Image (cartoon, rainbow, N blue to C red; front, side, top):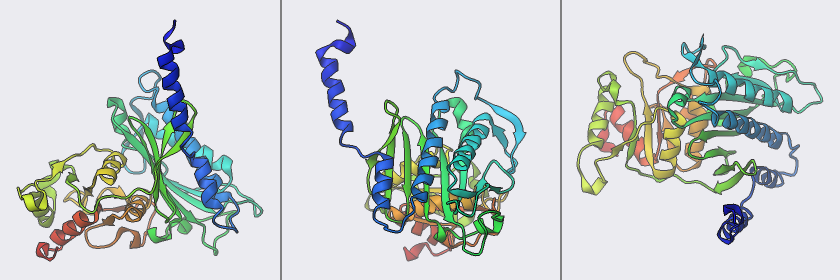
Length: 358
């Protein structure tokens, strides 16, 4: 008798099928949410479907790393001055293609493209959304099998812009104007997490059926955690207040559950996702060499800040709420402190020279 024909295998498969029957697919969830808004045209639902489709394609190719030629760099340098990885280019292409085919998006801003990308739409079409994205965050980690991700942010096209010929200025809206934001983490499993301003929900990809299934409904992050994520190699370049905060985190104090633990992957999506679930703070501060920080406001900090706040967390540049910052250019950078609310508040207090106020 083959393993697949054994009673044990049959029982196991039956149990899995039964368990899967209890899950709601991403598409079902989106349609259910759409039904709550009687005047919805369905365009937004289709837009999220397009994004999830591109994520599945990127995930498929990621799983072949080492078997097909997607390791290493293209030899090109992107607008950020960073060496572009082959998977960066592939992911950018797949998301642009999916959004172009869908017809709901009129303007794309991508980390891998110097300028915003207008899409051809018609006056009768539904192309009224702007999508800003980092197609593959942490792509340099692919070669060593470390988790990476995709980050996306969605805005409506303002009424005073024509969707047939949208201009870049249409995308330069503060994060408070986002209608949705999310990320995909490609790790031990592939998970899509997003919010539309009504809580945060996570969907895990079941590769056997090719569907994202609701696995983490109504995600909430702990108010306080024991994890801090930062590239401590730049310690001597940090602001004095930040150095004091890091020293404080590593002191022993049972009452405040210290010392905290350092966990730093180097893929923003992966670090953020872990801290969202377990509680913690992610920090990418200004340094002497990068006084404006390194993370991009529009398609990294803003979408993650939206998710963090909807999950009960907090996001700041140390002085200003991230979602309230007015962007001036597509690839604008910002310092970022994001995660459990109590930990972010304390970081702000140290940075502002008032650690005793928390």
